[in-house]
Length: 307
Ligand code: PLP
Image 1 (cartoon, rainbow, N blue to C red):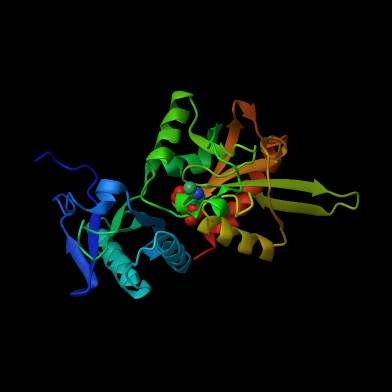
Image 2: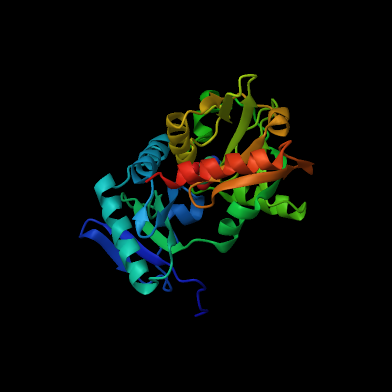
């Protein structure tokens, strides 16, 4: 057998093992007839554990449940996930005590063809170096057409827009396409010209204004959540923290010009965290780099305080 790079820890959710069943990540574990493998029929979550503590677990479990409900998929209870997450983190930290960040994935499929049970497991692996670097360096982005209107989600629930399904092949293809254009990432737009989201992230923009009496107003804006996008757990948590810190909040609709006019734009997600956007389609973002850097620093600090 060929060797497997960067071994992960795998813990299957199993009613016989309340803390989860630890398996060998370098050996085959999934049936070839699992509907997750044959049809991408399932849902997942990715969350970050920092210094052994998983972040935003209730928000991720809530979104996992709502994604599963959209697929009519019954999944294990939150307690079973919590136990498997903690087992996976403990095993990972025993093997690699020096890793301060761990990517924890929760995966559940409709199960093996013909069987009534879903297949569910937790994977713990190192956090990718590139994402950590992009938090600091920022990223260049291309806008790509997703090909449908921003009001399609309500009209066509079978398209599962807004569910985090295992069918991420399109999202990954968009990223590869961006790389061929020399960009790091993507912001999708709708057929009716609205800003949607990244393939694995939520779009944020900010405006800062100073009034005549010197009062500084900061406004943080994200596309409207009913535009067929995934509601980001990071965006949700950051908005709560930013509001408490005095920021004004806004929800689209946004058009590409709003991004180009902003004082700063970011792509935010649970693993890479806050990645400043330097260029969109080759155009520099933000009039004043010092303002953009200060806004980024403030949001990073607010986001670091979230558990
Ligand atoms: N939008 C999409 C399509 C995603 O895949 C993700 C995360 O992977 C996000 C947004 C950001 O979500 P979160 O902040 O919960 O990681």
